[in-house]
Amino acid sequence: MDEFGLIQTYFAGSRAAKEGHGLGHKQAIGIGDDAAVLAPLPQGQQLVVTTDSLVENQHYFSDVNPEALGHKALAVSLSDLAAMGARPWAFTLNLHLRSIRKPWLEAFSSGINTLALKHGIALVGGDTVRVQAEEAVVVTAMGLVPLGQALLRKGLEPGDELWVSGSLGDGAWALEHQPLAAKLLWPEPRLALGQALCEQQLAHAAIDVSDGLASELGHLLQQSSAHRQGLALVAHVQFESLRQCLGPELQGAVSQGRLSLEQACLCAARSGDEYELLFAAPVSARPSLRALSEQLDLRLTSIGRVEQSQMDQTQLNKQQVHWYGLDGKELLLSQEVLAGFNHFQEPQREKA
Image (cartoon, rainbow, N blue to C red):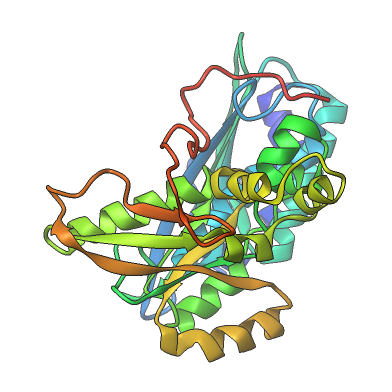
């Protein structure tokens, strides 16, 4: 089988390559030409574009379940769309493979096509390349948001509450202790939540938790502080609140005595591979967020607050997040302790 046979057999003939919002017009053209021609953008909508790469031995190992890899390859990009409040539109897929392995491709394509159909996003093209070393999967996803209403990282306001969706900590715990955990292999992008936050204008800023809660919160603070022309913002996060959103694997480790509750909260604070949404909202939005949580059947937890610092950005210590232990006292945590995923760190094999 050559490159064209691979594309036709596993991708071009799939429902994901024939259906989806981006191909929902009689003049739209998907896989088969030099480039795709998408449906016209609905009036008043902007295009949101994101790209993610999963590289063998850096983001996954060769014995990973290929169906789960297909799911995750698309899910991580959909999570970026969710953080912007975007509705999925279309995506492209690049595969860098050492060889054509039919059973692997069957499972991989099933994983990515199933998730694409679930969210109505059309597969409209991509590329396949033979490589000698590490394999890689690259997804570029496109979504739509109402003009000028995309959720951004720079919108934090003093007095905002910090919220997180779902549960935290199981990503890091699974990477070290249980690499087959569903949280690590089958993340669920919070698209419905992101769209609701955008459409109902409930959030001032948002980001997806891919590299770690502490890391992502730092990005929100840095970009929002820069946007405020030197007036720095700081965040206060309570472990007592974080304990309310510990993942089931972490809760199990605490109940078995493998971790203390404070250690579990620290794991949740630094854990990446979560693909939950961290967002900031005014206190007045709290009733609406509680109602939205019930409507989506998705836990939303307030974990802290945002304040304006008395110092300007040039005077402020790099530690813009203040963490408080279960006793309410401030913890002195180094950036190294809270470090999330480092894309240039030497990879380590997960423990079985």
